[in-house]
Length: 184
Image (cartoon, rainbow, N blue to C red; front, side, top):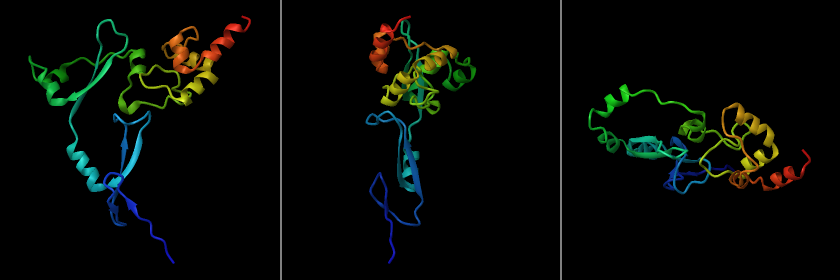
């Protein structure tokens, strides 16, 4: 007696035959998505249809006066191009100066593909706009001094037990109480 495995497309529910080419899709951003990317299996034709339907977008960081962090905005590339009225956007982009890199900004808003897991010792505690996961909180709690040394070495802000926002964000209220009662 033999067994037969049947696979279905996660998108359409269509049966994927043995000779069908299966495509893998990693979903990195979606309004219904949690903190980390997910992946699904689909028919290769479904993946090609997604590629054909893809929008061309411009992703820009807006540094507004009086605000510490940039706002990341994604917009239709054609709409963005129309904002350039003095010369064509292609010419403007070619002649524009390279973006300045500041340690705070690059840590707070990394490029989409460069984003690491904040649930690792190398990334935990770095400023970011997303929700702090339980795994990141645990790492910051367990390796508080080590993480602050790394952050300072990278020119980033340290996590302060005296800052109520930091204590709440990283779940450090117990550590703050413990350290405040220890003899100096």
